[in-house]
Length: 454
Image 1 (cartoon, helix red, strand yellow):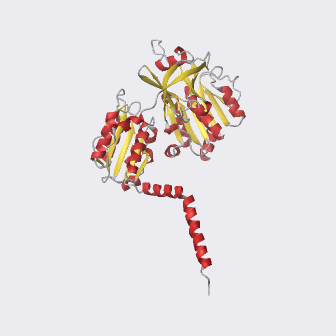
Image 2: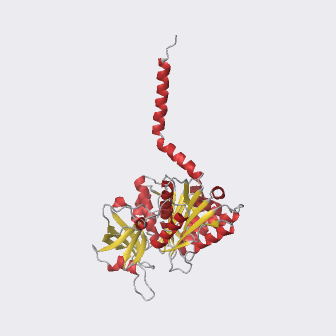
Image 3: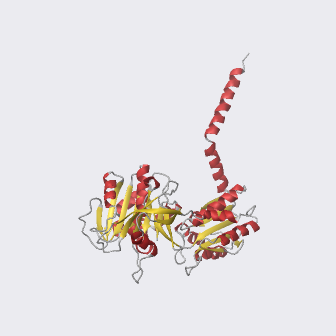
């Protein structure tokens, strides 16, 4: 007669093995189940955010809806597909406007895609929270344009667009109140939680200041160093906000917290009268060493580092080198060494900020490629590494177009930092000419094309 004990023992071992396996992979299983629920979500939150505030509000709303048990998907407006809109019954949009009515990069393709959708989307209810600044003539224009575009597809507005001036707390509270009245929120959001989005302000001490382009034909450019307390943290790509005389001036951060210093690269600004700009005047000239001023850190998720190890192409000009230098330092600490810098300035003789450090990174093979473009001078006697070009950054891109295509084909991302009107638009036009609009749009959807321009 067979003894059942071995079979029972084997069964118990199998049950134990499966239980242990489930325990080990519980986070992966929960994440996959959550992703499955979100893909089938009937509610969609879509954000278009330039400074990060719109995305932050979207993700806070996402958490509130998830906490009350609602399956909801939160993505950038560019990532929204026709299938997702056909599947959803509610679309909540949080959209910023910057400049003169312009759309943020992570939302600028949505309207064009919407025009191609064959469905009328008449089943879809929607609401728009439009962020803007009344100082601009096209106040909240992008949010209002989205409202009109959705109505043209016969979508049904839950309520009129809520316009928010400079993240006004009362307007944001009105948005939440409307969501509550429509039954989308289970309970009211206390006003006290809205103020939690305000950035903490700290007094930072000026510890160093040095002009890095002496005798340049351009305006003086200064490296600024500020001492930071141990509890102040940020990521590469984030923004330092100088609070001075009831105004705010923003600067790309050039360092990472591990360096125990907040480093900036600031261009001296002057009004037509010759008066120094408020922020640059204080940082570059007026502040005494060891004096303090109020600063806060603004998260800038659209320009934060990539999670995975990829080739990285960094493009910029002028003080935009600050944002690029932050990423290079971050990647040095992570030992991500496939980096290519394309940087433009005026002349090779005098405009070489941080060239010694760039040379060291090149010699250490942390920077594998360097292309420097100079618009006013072709002499390159001071150039120790890389290639020197006459003209602008986009001219260097054109000269290296074969290498650019090769890097993109091998998974490289593109980060751009610097002037919006001069450099960034011309560089983007050149990228379209070289790579094609479909490729650049794909990189943007995959968040492999990121910009911090001003």
